[in-house]
Length: 128
Image (cartoon, rainbow, N blue to C red):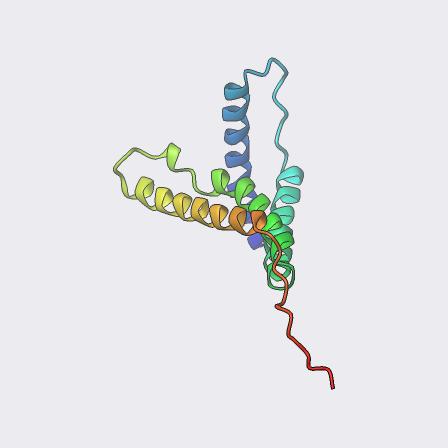
């Protein structure tokens, strides 16, 4: 089953990201254990955000860009872990390029999210 493979790939990455976050935030609490069930939930949430955000972007650009921005913020550090590769290696370069691409997309989503809604120009009607 492909989803089981993806869950087994994501679980260590989520655990590692949590270890980094706990270290950066200097949290004294015990770090939660990442279970396969939680990883499956995260997997389905990311699919939902990407799919619904993309469709919503076509109809409601600001709402869709908000959903896509949340997706990019959550998925980029997990999926493109250039920090786990040796600088200068092929893996580092490819993950860094993908990470920077996602950051550029995040910037575009934030730009659309921050823009004011446009209104259709009024047309003058002739009164007879």
